[in-house]
Length: 367
Ligand code: TTP
Ligand code: MG
Ligand code: MG
Image (cartoon, rainbow, N blue to C red):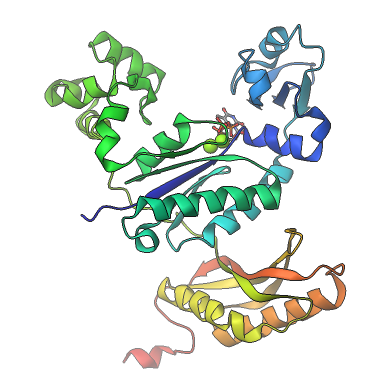
């Protein structure tokens, strides 16, 4: 298999950082985001905390009451309830931005994604580094958020690289330094080794990732299962062939940067290839969309979107052109607040499976 270059992006203390963005005055204070479970004051758990609070030991999963104790001496500590809607809207905009960097994209959680840059970076880590810096600065410009990025030859190692320096990290793990870098790490640092597994491994004398890589496979299979045991050992050797690919796409979209900022719908020609591509991808995955949307990123880097639900699901290029043109025209007539558009995109969503009968074809075409 040819060497790949994979980038992992994970936003730093995501929910807490989102709160800091809308309330800059809390930035240097300990910030704790809480999932309150009941009516009584402090029952529930910490969702996440900013790095000021983490210095005092507060982290995801600890009871809120414990977090209050840990921050007893910090009179300025801020406790806030989770606001999923707000974080999700920010996450969607960032994922859309990341998608525009590469065809091979996979979102793995609300604040985390992989990009396979092999075809763009041609095995050149310096190109990947440039793209990674661009990703970081665009997320900062657009949303005022920091993230940590890892670059390596597969998802496992890219993720480990991203986790190794937080917050605001940019870490490259080149093929020649993989073993030297990961072998000395505690085995619990290997994604897939949870607290329970780690404890059992310690009992078997496996302390580091390097120990696991060299450990007897038969014993591992007996201890952790015929599949999981050897799987963990190959992860410890830095092997991971999982492709970067979007899981069960709920939507398809593309964004481009316009040749010139504009305040009217003068870019119909520029977006034609995007629409052709989306329509082609719908057809090749036997899907049609029930919703067509547009995205506009203004020169002030605000993201706006509009969408229309169709009466009939479609995969037709003409329909997507007609609906998106209408949405763009109405956006520029009413909504633009005088700020020109810099990047524009099309997103189709609410995908339905069409089986094997394609648009424009009747069953008689098959016989
Ligand atoms: P993470 O990326 O695991 O953590 P984080 O972004 O808060 O911090 P880091 O800088 O270490 O990446 O999770 C993303 C979000 O998911 C997090 O901000 C809140 C939520 N979350 C929970 O609600 N509960 C949890 O136990 C974890 C781990 C995360
Ligand atoms: Mg994170
Ligand atoms: Mg994460």
